[in-house]
Amino acid sequence: MTLNSTENWKTNSEKPKTRREELVLDTTRQLQDSLVNVRIEKSITFSIQEVMQISTILNSTLSLQEIKELVTESLRGLFDAEGCSIYLWNSDTESLEFDVVKWKGLEEMKTIQLKKWEGIAGRVAEDPQIRIIDDAQNHRKFHGEWDKISWRTTRNMMCAPIESRGNLVWVLQVINKKNNWHFLPEELDLLMGTANNLGMAISNAKAYELEQEKNKELEEKNKELKDIMTKNILTLADSIWTRDSYTGVHTERVMHYTDFIAQKLNFSEEQRETLKNAARLHDIGKIWIPDEILLKKWKLTDEEYEKIKEHSEISEKMLSHMENADLLKKTIRWHHERWDGKWYPDGLEWEEISFCSRIISVVDAFDAMTTNRPYRWTLPQEVAIAELIRNKWTQFDPKIVDIFLWILDNFDVEEFKDVVDKKREWRLDEII
Image (cartoon, rainbow, N blue to C red; front, side, top):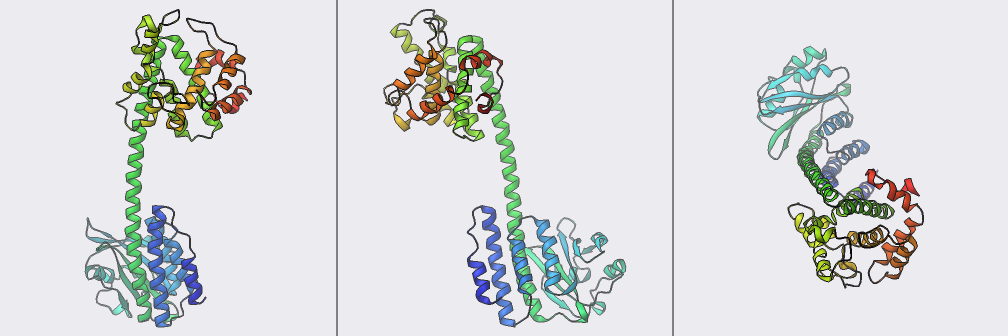
């Protein structure tokens, strides 16, 4: 592989799409640059596949453990060494702990601990400089515990400190060049570039882990708040049933109708839940309407009707304490707005009205027409459908009317109304 092909490999990589990809891609590019530059300047015949493997590792994970495991294995192959290991710096005990070892049969080496001044690794931790040790056995800082446990002989090594944000985190060792060869100064340069970029990879991984931890805490908090809000919503919805059984059953049917439309429109679960909650509570403000008006068994006077019209604003005010629920509150406030802007409470028109409000407007009117009211008998379904069609483009969003009519053509409304009081979850694919 030539330099040009290497450059193409870098520049043709996809642009990062997430914060995670941005972090790892930044590290990877710097590592690639350092590895390729050393290879050119020193004319070392390293395997470009091994170099790119290390880059790929740092571009594929932000898990600290995976970085350690995979990089040590790759460095052992890159430097043609018998083993590669990582000591983890424990700032609490001020000691080095064997964390990862890539040398067949030496998993038990993880029991070794070194103080900052003990052994060659301890010396590198104490004075963080990268080193080649040509004759490990006769080095004054050599720690023989390794050889005693492993039944191997450490001949030579390269040893490098890995720092993150100016603090020591690892000591990396590449041990025993194969075929009794020695490590070259040029290889030390390559290890130095790897060590520097590993430090950046660690910083990014730690930042990512911290960010994930914070996100998890935030998700748990949001779930807790959502559970509280849902409980409050259900409590309020039950209060409607207690005050006025007609309104309670009506809101339950409206909730199911709106959810059928949401499913047809492929709403997300979160969007569906918001719409269902708005449907449950769209008439909650009626609990503040006097009984002599709300439960009146004949037609309302103009003055009484004006009082009834206040319920959408009252409903919004009743939910004012809910946080992160602006769409829910606006949906409830605007569910009586007309497509042509000639209704209450704000006289909005067309797409000024929230989409969820426009959905509730259609199904609310249909259910009101097809059920008995204290002051009139139910209208036949055909008449109600004709009214929806007649009022497309004036009272109702035509798109929503068309979707709702498609739903009505595909299931038995009367059967649905008979069982809705069981409060079970209905799915669109169960009824059509």
